[in-house]
Image (cartoon, rainbow, N blue to C red; front, top):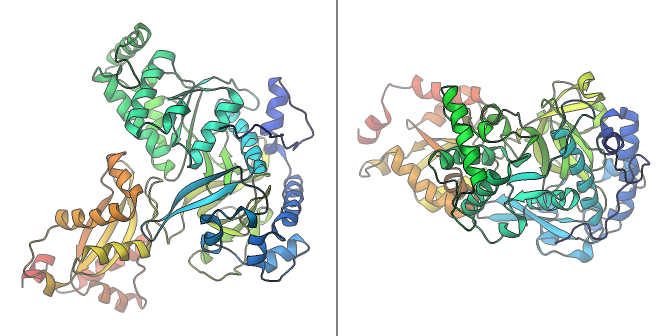
Length: 550
């Protein structure tokens, strides 16, 4: 599938296509040197173009409800903050007649398991052109060690999911723009399962070497562990056709084994390969970066993209903070104090108004004929500062924090909400009286998991043999049933995503009496969880089992 068959570069800085490295860097990474006024000029010019497309479109008219904003200021005042529910009936039906511009392809992601399984978003040619341009910049930045000092390679070990997911678009565009040799090839990704693709990619990598590794942080970590295990176990020739090991691959493995043995440690991927660039996407990357750097000898560079917003930001060669591309979306920032609120006209700030140290939910308006206006992405960022001399930039820089508190995302796979947990409990018929669920992190590995705090019905438990393992297994049956991505956490990442703590009967009531407010069911603050546990301990010192059988 060629997304670029009729594309034309958006001429952001007035250059024509260039071939020399310095001019190419200025073309694709030069946005870092924009002043905030220059940045806003690009944002406003593209926003004005988008308004002329979006406002008269069918989807725009449905949201505007007769309003007719003429300026950007009027648009920000009159258009309500939106969520996917505002677009679902149009987009899930793929009503192209109501879109601001024709869709070249549709991209898919998880919405809310069971009740609302998927979201889809239309990508116009303009969106793909912007994606292509910014993708070039990311590849340059990933292989750079300073301003304009970069060296493009061509062999890519890929942990990217295929179309219709966003990473499939990313892989195809990078392949077409750079002629990368993807391992495994894109043509195999729709016909092979994840494990088969991974083995095939490993085999190709051992034969040819790797310049880049692309994938979600969690997937990259899992693949790295599997790669070492496969090579150490002598199965590096499996998958993707012939099982014979080439002389080149065998020599690579022998050299790596010797290096690890000489240094008195286990073999690591960095003994097998020398990466020019390592790129990771998705949520929870911060949980895996240190481990991945230890495994590969190169710290991953994080980018950020979303199905609705496309490719919006990237870190630089410093691997610290990310910058938003000026031509991907028009950006607004909702202060964190409002993120649990659902009012349609909450106050936002633009990128020139963000404050260092503050957290914000990202709100985007699609550019280049996209469908979304003032759309709450559900992604929270902290502004880390304004500018960085090391990056040659005076722009605001950000760090991704997590999803908004109403959504628990584990390793980029799940979208757990209060509705989905209630549905799981209802289907399971377990005697659960009350509950809350938090995303927590393993003390040893730093990796995320879902922690449910459960208060059971004592009268219902008296004649039921129960344990944490039984309850967890029972709940997971229904999490898997409602959300295939939850199942992938175990099937693909081989992790145990759910832990359970039983609370004494009356614990939630005791908390409410102490705090004066009901317990927040999804993503309560750590201090709130500690108060819940202290409320339990403040009661008569009976264990859960004493109360069940007593």
